[in-house]
Image (cartoon, rainbow, N blue to C red; front, side):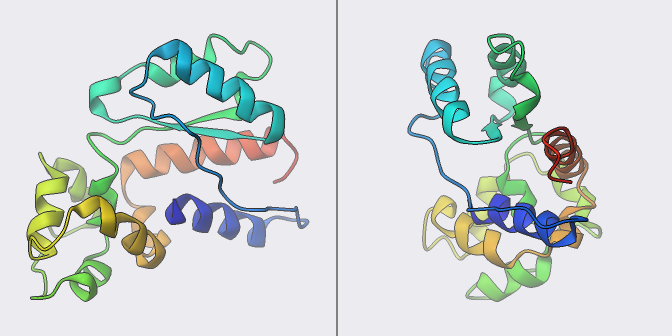
Length: 175
């Protein structure tokens, strides 16, 4: 995910001392897979990477905590990326980036970036904003490359993820 990659790279640039950051690697399974499959994949990823980001949407509440329970000593290396509903809402926080990606322009239905978490169906809003020309997941990566991190920093669930990410990187002595 370009957004995760950009955020970690931004943290690396601001770190008191440089650390070697080689980018994001996406796992093989989705977190909606059976729990034992997710746990097995996280165990494998923890063998090779310093931190593992586990994403889940509103319909998977508690999954990150349940996965962490299997990793007593390694639990602090597992970072939960948990939006209020769906991470697609985060892409709605930067109306300028969304407007630039929209064929007809986009008029936001909210005033402030933190309001995007009130969207009941962020994917439907993205489909509308993008002219219904594609599945919004295809544009998620592109928007993730252009959305302003400062605007995302005003979204509560993004703030929680960023705080948890910073804590994990501090415990690993990267920050």
